[in-house]
Image (cartoon, rainbow, N blue to C red; front, side, top):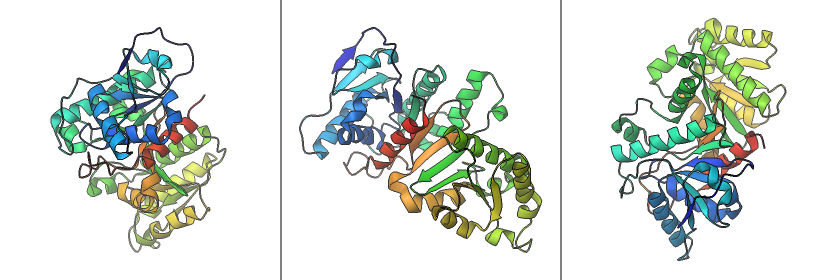
Length: 351
């Protein structure tokens, strides 16, 4: 293991990848990703625990049929990443060492380590020390056991960014966008119960989601993205027969967005709008709640799915899957979604 204490470089900054829950597949898929694509070694730094990543490297080497793991270069400071020896994976110790966390076991110790890495990465991004943040999966029960008040990455990153900007949380709205080849969807609400998700479908929330989606796609180079808005009820309410949310809330929100020059249309029947988007009619679909938008994306492309948080003052992506505790440590995890998330982060970031 190499320890780096060289002077910082004035050259460009890296993509920072958090290790995720150390008991899950996050460390393993990071190790597998750089073995599968060695060219990433010159562009990534892992925010994690060095011993956990060493264990993951050994597992990845065994899976790949070699006794030689990817060597690690432990950074004493993130700014030293440019001096990483060729062929080494740079790791900065971003959390208190969690010790020998058992694979596949939910624990407060693992949740605390994962949360510390998230905070480290967010603060580095807010200080413009990294190009983008890619987060490996965390376990919501482990975060809760560690006393973390946020249910997942999206809410935690929003809170850190709002605190950094000294602004109320509601002044920094964010949304979750899930993408796979051929389909992108943005959610009006995220990790809340279905009962609360229904009450979150308000004029203000729908308009805000459309605006954030427009701004994200414009930053990515799409001048006037075609935004489809899904209805809430079956068949988008059938003219009020199955509910009035489309008439009273969603359609007025679309009209407001269109008055601002946004190419938003709908509300469309939720059971067909995702198919229409995949066939090329729309660039993105706005879904009214978590499972409405995530089920079609995960059905079509879980292996290559990417989660992007839009509205943050920095680029953040992640794989479109969880910690997979049932296969952690077995060598069965795939790095495909993580690689897609890294690609999305690099393509969304200024060079």
